[in-house]
Amino acid sequence: MLRNISQVYRYMDQYWIDEFFKTGNLQLTSFVKNRTVDDIRNDENEGYHDYIILSRDRTKQSSIRFDDRDTHRMLCTSTELDLNKYLPYFKVDGCFKINNPLGFGYEVAKVLKGFEKGQEGMTEYTDRGFSFFPLEKFPDLPDLTDNSPPIHELFPYLDMIPRVDFNMFYLKKTKYSPENEYRLIWKCEREHDLIINCPDARKFCEKIT
Figure 1 (tube, rainbow, N blue to C red):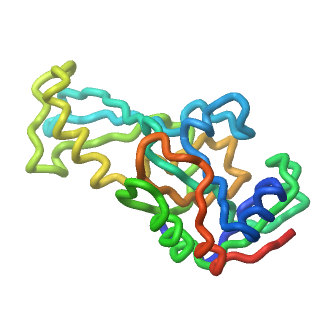
Figure 2 (figure 1 turned 180 degrees about the horizontal axis):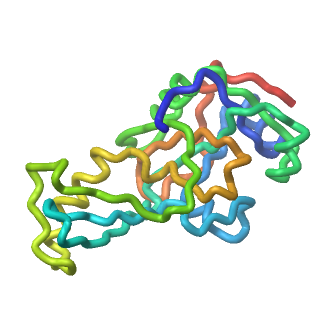
């Protein structure tokens, strides 16, 4: 799922495209914004993902939920260029092309406050709302001792899962599959501004409309 693509397309209001190419001001989004009712996608699951931890003998299991808590900023793009399809779908009037998503993401990372890490990749469309985390694959982690362990016993799993599973923020319901979404995600300062100034990212982009 997490693979680099050579070019992607960002559909957004022409006002913000013109602003980006003129001043370098770029409007990003967040998982919190994408799950609010005024966003076109209205996906209440954005930024959440559940894991079912399985004991090594598979006799016990416990669930934990990851919540973004507004610590990421992202840009949602599509691998398809189809103005007739996507402009009305996203209810916008503009589109621009990113010729080098990796270079673009690097320039954005340089201007984000408290930047920690970035990643990019294709969205996976599935209606399964959880992932399994089998402990036999992780011999250095403690085994589950109960189906409802105290919270402190879950800390090692909470620490390990984001290190080994980069897919948690790339899962969406199958009804969104027509978007063919490719996401760029940056972890940064909590509640970072959605509008950033990143003029150096423009060298990897070109206007479509």
